[in-house]
Length: 161
Image 1 (cartoon, rainbow, N blue to C red):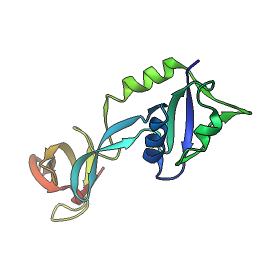
Image 2: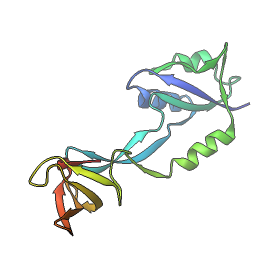
Image 3: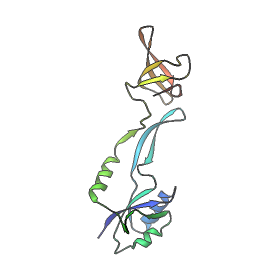
Image 4: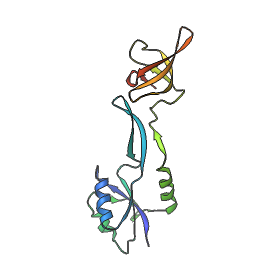
């Protein structure tokens, strides 16, 4: 009977392990999530593994033995409780697949209404309110200067949350 199992892969070999397991007829699931980040001053969207180095696999131990799976290139070992590999319930897999569709953002990335501090430039030391991104490398901030609110576009590296 087919069940879902959790494998731990060797460092940076998760895709290699998945490729070799799929050649053996094993169904694999690598949960990923799209994450919005600031990288090298640019706001980018990257796809990252939700569980780095972990791989969910579905197979029947009667058809493919666990030693064959463990001996596959890139696989380090089964996640176990005691001497038996952990069987992941189908409901957990369905929930993971459902959450893979959501887009996330880095918690260090400011969102509308966050108070930020300007760290460089002529406005250094002032607090501002983040309003929106202005292209890939800049953002629009709301500054309170001389009892009036001024919108200013600043480089993403010139302020922090």
